[in-house]
Each structure stands twice: as C-alpha cells, then as structure tokens.
Figure 1: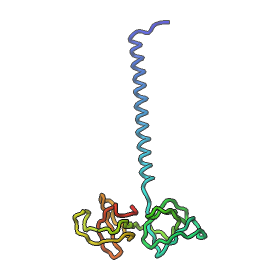
Figure 2: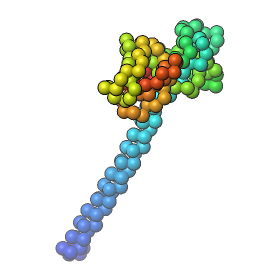
Figure 3: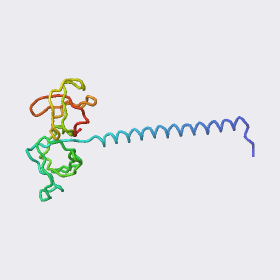
Figure 4: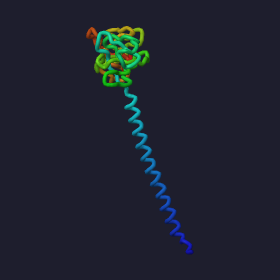
Length: 173
C-alpha cells in the first residue's frame, strides 16, 4: 500500500483537529442552551404565588373536602402561598409553614404581607433614616403596594397609612 505523503498526513491531522474543535463548540453551545433553559425553569419554579383571604374567617382543612378535618381559621387579608390548586380548592402554606387546604372562593388575588417581627416600622421613604409614619405589630396584615424597591416594600395599613418596610420583616413575598 502507498505511504501517505507528509502533506497528506498534515492535512488529515488538521481536518481531524478541525472536526474535534467543531464538535466541542457545538457541545459547548448546547450546554449553554440547556443551562439557560434550566436556569429559567428554576426561576419560574421558584417564583411563589401568593393570595390573600377575602372573607372574615376562612376555614382551613387537612384535605380538599368540606367533610375533612377543620384545622385552622385565617382572618381576612391574611396572605397564603399557593402550593397547588384544583378547580375548587387550593393547597396553601401559611407564614408558619403549615400546609393546609382552603376553598378557592375564600381567596383573593389581592396581595398582602404579614409582619413577622415584634414591631415593624413603616418609613416615609425607602431609607432607614426616613421618618417613621406608622408601626405595625407582629401578625398584622398589610396591603402590598410595591415590592420592587430593593430591600424595601411599599405597604398600606388598613387605616390608609402608607410607608416603606424592610422585606426581611415581612412574610408573603
């Protein structure tokens, strides 16, 4: 058999090297695409959905049926995290982390948050040095007005006063 010339051997090595580089580039591109898709899916999966109780007293059950055991009562405006839903029921998480069932008709899309420290101060601006406009005790529900202010959340008290509270002092975000 004929021995390939040095030039033919060099061209074959270059062609092999080029194909290997192209395979790596395609693999890297595919990996970036998959990583991006996974990151987007994780972000969407981690975005919690919250609602608030829209009746004076909402019963919570251990299963999605009126015949199930009544476990708790939540008051109007109390925020809950939606974990899953059927056509008539929602499995929710409360601020204590308890998973229970509530009728969908007892929920509102209106967003509220719950004070989780002894007493939270609402300020006139999203600034720790701004004047205090009102204080809210632990477990008080406040209407969520704006959550896009860094560590500050704009809220409204049921008496109409508005102010900015630190997000780490609230639950329901």
